[in-house]
Image (tube, rainbow, N blue to C red; front, side):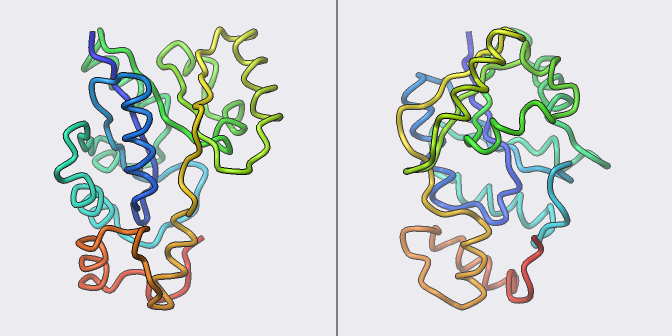
Length: 204
């Protein structure tokens, strides 16, 4: 059986924290692969800085040479609002025998009850939850327990911290022409500069 991790996000831009989380979850859970799933128009965010095509290209550049990584453009190709429920159903249709592990941050876990048709999401995948260093786990653990009890949700809190920087913070550094070493792959920095991205006001 394929055990597939899915790391969704706007990836605006994707950074070394994202690929590091994917690698850590892949190794810890013994996954067959991790699919990077760039969002089209996510329901919980406003318009974003880079275009869908630019974000997809950045994800492709960032995952080059990672043996565990695959890029899935299904959400980029779809028009209109994109919901995780729809994407997971599409995965199940294409790979009905695969065991899906959706990788999310602890902040996203706290938003799960507000997801569209969230009651129908839990049977489709397990959740691998990654927090930030120093982040309080209490509310997330309490909610995870409730979702397990009410919906038989499969939620595993990872025993390691995730990225120390967000894409929003990285865009601020890029606008200021700051140092992105240790945060952003050099070929991505070159692509961002070539495309003239993140030079104006932040989109969020």
